Length: 101
Length: 373
Ligand code: SF4
Image 1: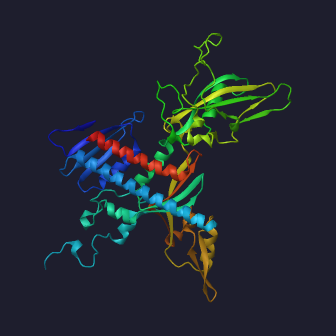
Image 2 (image 1 turned 90 degrees about the vertical axis):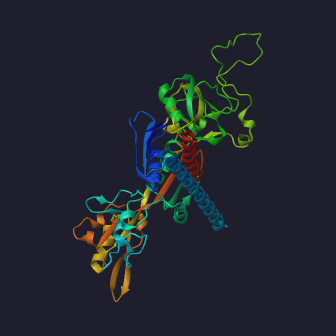
């Protein structure tokens, strides 16, 4: 769900269901690192409701697109973390087996 | 004289922060009274006035990000994540604890229980026993699903302490027996005394085939962590029940959490601001309870202190507690270096848990992108 104005696409609040700090805080990080973003933040309106609101304000680009790009960035980070981690584990296991020989 | 902007002055290196700001950006200062500079500076334009770009460069992240495995076995692992922000490291930790699925006992059908442990307490204890099986082989069971071979695991527990045995019998988790064919209990709607029915009565599960015909389980039957005490039986007491496990998430109940715990700490950094010699050095070495400092011989009978094991530092701040010492020793934490520890409960090895957690965060992003398109 998205609350924004029709006249000004550069600011909007997006409500995410079934999400919490896990995604919202990581997105806040990637959003903040995007130079097009002037302000962003998130809030959880009530602790017993599983939803979070993310606010994005930009220098002019549609906030929705910027948020999507941030998701993309976060995904790329995750992919890189995963491949680096898998490589490190494989190397560690190789080393261990060669040491025990 | 023409005005030159500050950042065009030759002695200021471009795109680099002055040393003290760089330090404040990348370190937490652990002072005697309270830590300072604990926040992370995320905003891309935070240093715009100095001509320094603070935005995320994916290629830069790729270049700087490192993983170092320190320890790895079937149960736990320790590794360093270097060059990542706390928000993302914390997302991994949170997902590990509450969003990586496992199998756990959810329903207990008690046929007979005369032990002193109440049924609901017994059921709770059974739920917390880790089941050693790969949860990725199973589906979630929703409310109206009938338990089948793809979404449930059934265990049987039947232990009896003979009357007059004169001793207590301990019921262990390894007394649970896996039933690959599903439940043995007939539904109450079935009429067991019906003589002309030769079909098998309907049970609480409807398996179309036995789970042990699956290649994953044919050679390694599903077990639980052995040696966990479930209950104790006095002479004449008996427990007979069936436990049905299904797939779930740690945020529903901690029994589905795949980790005993997962945590991280930032890398401690201990810096000697001055040379600490002779008696002072001896004193410093004695102060530290985890032996961070060593004494090195400079020759000519003079000694000085060195920081030998900064990683062991617990930041107890004992070394800077006494007046005067804060000027000699600086305690800091590196903001983007995480010492991550994962203790698995046994269902999946810890390295697999971490990759699963990262995948889950990726899936979340993907879901959001498709929902917004
Ligand atoms: S803070 Fe505590 S553990 Fe760390 S170096 Fe000082 S005395 Fe040792």
